Image (cartoon, rainbow, N blue to C red):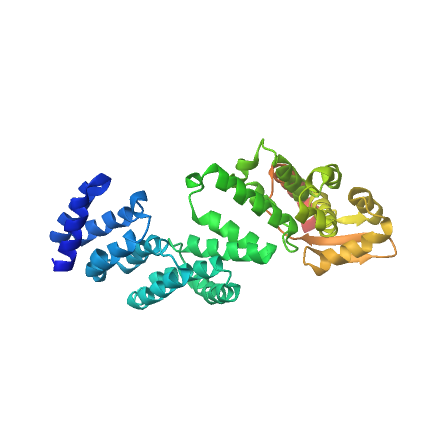
Length: 376
């Protein structure tokens, strides 16, 4: 044991207090050279509330941790350093410290990624959005290449979603926020955080111009945090969009227009709900996907002269495939974009599969009875 470490531990033990026994345990593990056990102990020790004030954690690193950091798993080392840098008075100092650490752990790709994410979060805190964007764009392809989920993924998606929320990019925020929730144990989140994330995610789904699949968010457990609260209207609105229920959308207008972002996006929301209404009509129609302009107008509450434009928008967005019969005023659709289905839509699909099964059986029976005539 070096004199620096010995003097530091002696000083800490002499102070006593609630951490006295833990300092003794750390010293014992250090002297026994039980590096794995010491790493696990230090990883929890740096989160103690008693150490979060002043420069205690910084001195802990300088006088103790730095002496054996080369013996610690590099990813674990970064995990330990992160809470230490949060106690630094200046963000620039923390960024510089992590950059120096990055050089030490460059042999471990995940440790390097976590360093970059931590630097990106620091830039986001200081509103250095250009540097934050650069880091996210640099890391995105690297995470796309990883073929398994790691402990670092959630941190990246959290950084990306927070950045895109600040920038007002609803589509990117929605995608990255969903990925973040898919990487963590939702039961570990406090109810307040769940409710906040659910609300932001719901708003993003409605405001994002390229999101036409609401089944995924409606089935996510995080949305339960809004049930039977004053934000219940958001769940009701998402359910209306999921099935293209224009009437329900209109009935909820007086409630959701209190929210400024939704009130300002009324034109976008109206276009989206009518497109989803058309998609739901096509899905429910099954094999007979020839819809008259008149039927679509009744369901979408649009003037009949706007139905052709609605269909053209759906075709251009890749939501449906087919053709428009302007003479007979019909839409001939042979494909609708797949979506996550709710129970009502699953029931519709089951009904169509049952009908298809019956048709196959009927044809099989017909061929069996008339096989002789056909073969002769």
